Length: 286
Length: 149
Image (cartoon, rainbow over all chains, first blue to last red; front, side, top):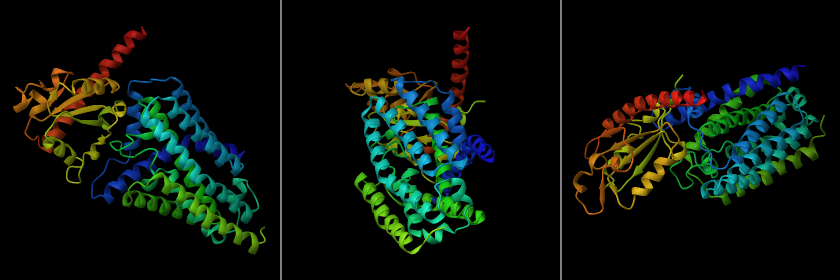
């Protein structure tokens, strides 16, 4: 019963929380650059405005893919907060990304084609580390279920520092932050125009934005799992981790896709895999 | 509620400008003027834009480019001509390959004079354009209603 309530709470509250996080992100970014920055509610204004604009669609099927992207993002997030199977959450999450890539491919534009190809590369880059995160949490807490991992009294972070650092690295890729924002350049007047979302305008772009808010909340929720034994500490770490991501965003320029692959697989191989080997041999488990 | 005024994304196009007005447009984005305070983002993608900001006069080569870009911007949209060249062709007005100001190709809503236009006047022009954008939105809504009936 509680799982249904948390799932519904996620569906309602996540866009609000995600939008606020995006607003704080822009404000902090502006302050780091010595500017005042937009109001805190600016992301909400942006999305509300997008829904007021004319709907210009060249290929109607792209809109269907974006709806599928939003729906699967909400479903995987709701299942995550309902305490479901971590592996299923990851698969539904990946499926959502496949849909946005299909949406970008459906729109015949060289910019969105290149954006889609780069998005597939980033998917490939971060996926191993996400799986290692799930496996690591399983080895330590003895369950793949989010409800059991989150309420476990085992201090997972002490056993999985490597996996946590690896997860932070791929978080930069997943949040599309600067060194790895190869698929959607944050500032559109650059080589990709806007990559993946070049051909989406008006209400459709608004849906992409809302799906991104849901996504961010789920990703920050994944950090919580490492600190399930102490909720207060978990929230502090989530705030610090997000601040770190903003800081990295503002201090790095974009890197090539080769670097994204190397970083993603590099941290997965060294930090993630080594950490798992050590845990497997020296920790008997629950 | 109207949110257009709170989040105008602008597209900046340099139609044969001497780069004088362009650096002033970009100066608006720097920490000193910081137009992002008003939710203004420089998008570079016509499909995401609300305000079409053009510097420089129109010549025969970029006539079609400007027209094409303008048509790709979803309604409601406004056009701001920045600098004297964009307003009327300026000193290049009599040149053999010049069509003249931006209004020779697409309807212009706000003219920002100056050579080069100062960042303050550019921001003023964009803010003035937001009022027109709002009017266009209500007109669009009424048109939609009529079509609905």
